[in-house]
Length: 98
Length: 258
Image 1 (cartoon, rainbow over the protein chains, first blue to last red):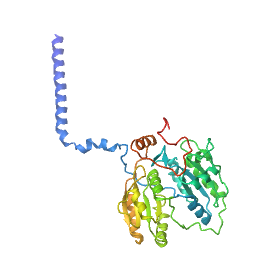
Image 2: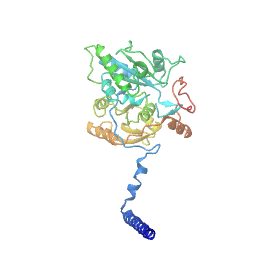
Image 3: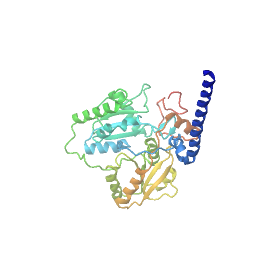
Image 4: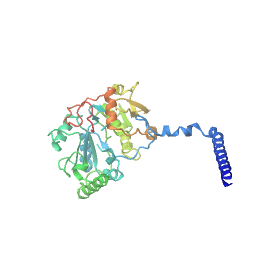
């Protein structure tokens, strides 16, 4: 006698679960228009492309003299020692990179 | 050149006690010979990068010479900046600056060799560039005062020319005398004008122009391989003054893993 009862119980559980899913889906459908499109697409904008600039401050940097004559004259005038660095402003013949 | 090393706050602080010279390798015959006398690579020729510390007259070495500060002073990964700053401070402590010298004033603008190279170097640094065109000594002196004070110190590259027509070659359509505040393009061949101030301007408009540049966005760091590949594909080429003798950066496309 217990078997049919258990079967109807299972059916009841199934109906309740289906109702819960329907309620969640209805809620989602209701909320969808409230979500701003720019929020959904913000992620795409946040990833910079290869040549895209990213927002950034200009941090403090070393104040470089660009020529040996200029640096040497300044060092002789001030008595400061010279930190000498040299690097090529091109790589494989392409400019714009150290 | 490891740019992260030179943006280390400790290194920047220590650098103020030195005259910091950053030359452009292969861009000047005389400088090339001088650099070669200081350090040669395995090939016996001038390498792409050279580093050393010299006395104020340029005659004595205060450190070994090498391709980079890390090669000269060492420092494990992540500590190179700290080690460099400590070594710089050690050198300063031991160095006897002659009392008669004027260490607290500046005489001239820290200009690049010429306009063309200044634009390229600014692109490498991802910094704005100030070009003075046809300024007289008094007008230049006003800029000298600004160039060496905060917040402009170390945040701009500088160039100076009396040949106004030179500005046309870097993309300025209507060249004229004055103070040009510019952004270089990615490849350092052309510029975008941020602001232009009259040569005889007072200090305030000049500072406003400089501030406008610093309020802008800084270009993103470049990926060397991608930059070189795109440069090659779009015909962005650079001619050096003397032959490139470092096999690592000679002409052609980058090798795998370079």
